[in-house]
Image (cartoon, rainbow, N blue to C red; front, top):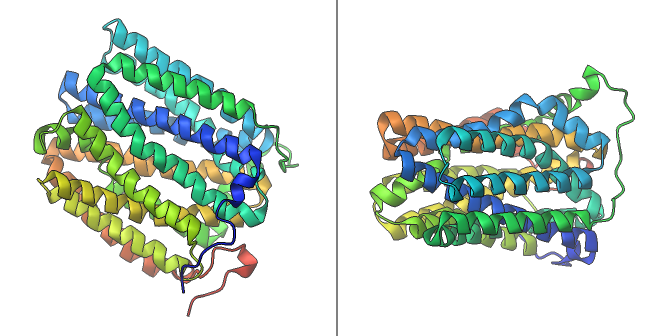
Length: 416
């Protein structure tokens, strides 16, 4: 059997530091989802321009790309818990700035983009610190369980955050931003409550070799390179999040609450899959399941793009979320288990740039294509591209395709 139940379904929660981390990440992700829904709807409602929806993603992605040589080494040399907590406070301040602009009637594209740029800088430092912190909070035998529940935390926020964000925005934009500020502050408080964990720091002197350590590791390890780049190009082409305000208002004729449902649907599918994987973790043929997940993500994207029925659109988005969760689970497990702790910050910084490129840059791709060809062709073409990527990567990275278990490298064996 490829799936079998784990001995302790809640192994990660036996450790109080991880429990605090879990709920902190949930609150911070919840806040991020509320802000994402509010900013996207507010921007499109005021401008009616799809290109601005794409720019929202691009502005938040660029700092991760520009600062990639800094953020990873900082996470490897400094207290990861402190970095994450301080960044969450910056996030709260940025959300507060959006609240003030909305309340004073000064919400406009370029001031908002300036705030989103600071959001992007904060997340550039936050992401590698958070991704590298989780393995420091649990022993190795509980790490796969922690990764699955960690994904569940984010996906639970991805389900409830957009729905609540849409409902709150329906009351008023100021209400949505106020709740987001409160959640960011609570998340920061929980992070500050985590005792400083044991962390292996690099003993290397600052040098280009040290700074580029994440790139060097990924380039040398074909399995990690294949997993990261597969996600990059699959979601870069298949992502449709940025265009959901268009589908909600113009194609499916839904309001802000309907947009919340659309934004929540991928999270619903993902959390069902994440909980399933926490209880029944992949035991064999992990690489094959990863490629199947990417292919199904492409199929769901095509169905969503072609649908004019709300129920079918939501089902397609749920399929996309569940399929993407399989890919995320395998990728994050490989990175966490195969990367030495003293390199995790730099490797995760590179990974976060790839993830950011697939999400934020993918939103820019979608917004640009939608402004030229229309929203429906932009999504369908992207889904076809995702299917092509799955086929090409399966052929180009046979070692990744042959991954059997998600244990440490010494235990990885080819599936026959």
